[in-house]
Length: 171
Image (tube, rainbow, N blue to C red; front, top):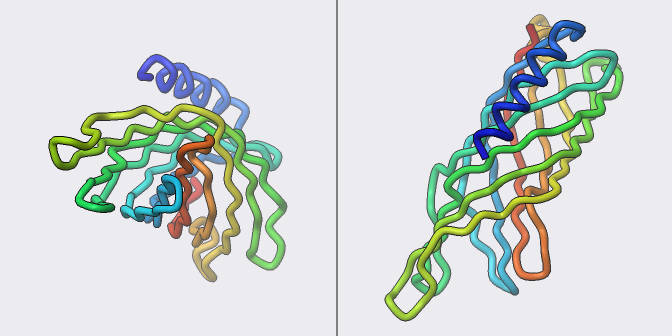
């Protein structure tokens, strides 16, 4: 996992040579982990770093859990998620813009409960996508408020998604 992230950071620094802007963001994410017909919603914080050029960007995202949630005395902790995205950015019109994210996420989740239940740590790695809308803050054109939806992982047994609210600063 660290090799993948290191390779991505190398790609970002190489891309920065031709990038027209670099950005950093901080989001609060209302996550939703769906297992069968049950849901848990632990909160999380994400740090985003990216470089963009001509309405295209590469973004790295690191998410860490703020809280744990439980179903039937079984506790779910979304420990961390590391993701990389190719971001397609719209032009900013009247201060608003839309981004579409396509990428890969590596998500770790710990499950703990009574002795006779499953206890352990699982990794969910796979395709990830998202859609965000953002608005420039008047008189602070480098700062954007962002609202987004992300799908971190989905298969027949589990789905991990989130709604994010955050700030982005463009250098």
